View 1 (tube, rainbow, N blue to C red):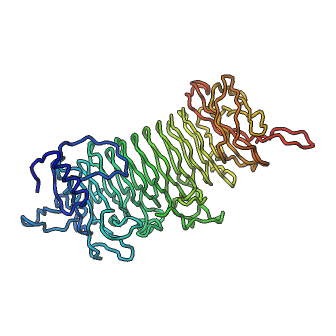
View 2: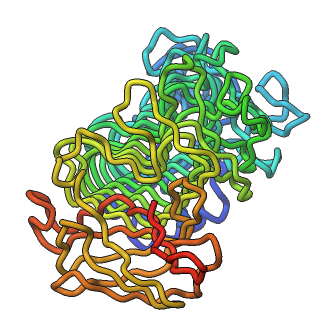
View 3: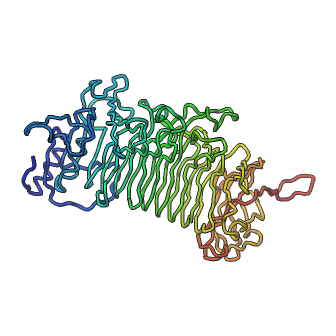
Length: 552
């Protein structure tokens, strides 16, 4: 039933009342206006104008015309069909702009016939075995909220509502925003299993938070499509389409994907505070510790990381742990973050540590910059025991990418991949990079005296006014960057002096990077381009033999 337009005061009062009561009935209220979508912190809940309550855990058909409160096959009057999630989505899609935002909440009975699993306190919605490419349909016209946390009862340790794809998981799950302009949808407190791409995001300003993608009911293992490790838990958890901007994907868990956990495309999307490759509580219980078994088919099947394209994406404060896919022994294992495009912020991610700080590593590279990477900022990330390069730089159009404050720990030698011209390294410079960049030398250390370190530009690599970063390393012959010790700016002549937080201990040394301050410091490349790591410089030691600066 649709009501006549009300005053602004009345509308606001009704909206607040609905928020407090959380909507016992489906009602529509005409909004005073249809506001343009805005970026919104995920912790701020949207007050709905309309509430639709899902009362059934079934999915009896794939009709795109049946709704919760109108059934074309039945008589006029009260509904003759259950209010399923699919029908709630159809109902929401049919409502006018004045009825939005629309909340789809849940009040499914604790009945096995409705998918209730008493032992876990969850409701499993088995999606109808449709022939449609997208199994659950599309959210149309925007401002639709699906909130699994609104289901009364059930567990408090994870999503109560689990949506299970049909067949062997070859169908996509749900399209968030059907066409351009269908913006500002929100999905939270849901778990998705047995889909190809679990969520396809087509539009702008959507919020996807506090969901599980690809985990078993209890959150302790990957949910494998068809029980086959090679198929993983799906092709992706969240795939943002070209043309979709300003989406927020935060505090979700992704596990077991045979593709990427998330594909971030277009511009200005944020992927933050997610767990990738772990259980729901941030662990990797099947991770091997025997070196001969790590990254083999008996190791933890964490799946893939994220791919980043387009412009100005933000990938921050995420955990990537134990990433591995069930692929041939000669194939490259997945990177935690594979980035192409321009202007991305990749910062403060923990790669190779699980959610409890355990050092579990990953089987591929940490961050891989490829395919015309430009003006990216890779800041403050922690890399621990990446099997391949912590940071790998590639592409002949590579330019103006700044690396700062990244720490890298590795206890076994960096390997050389079959067919690769260069071994992996803490910061790997691939042969496809511009020659001027590949051959440019980072800042050289000329003296270490207690906490005072002095230096110049690298040999044959004048670097006026460059930003110099000093890193702690040990002398075990494995290139690392265990701690960022200082960041200073060189003079116009390239000279610099830095103060360490403490004097170096025995067996410790310093590596440097240089970041250019102007165009053409590195021939043909822009300001803001950071080099790879230097050789290791160790303090002069008092011995009976001639003392020299140690350099590796």
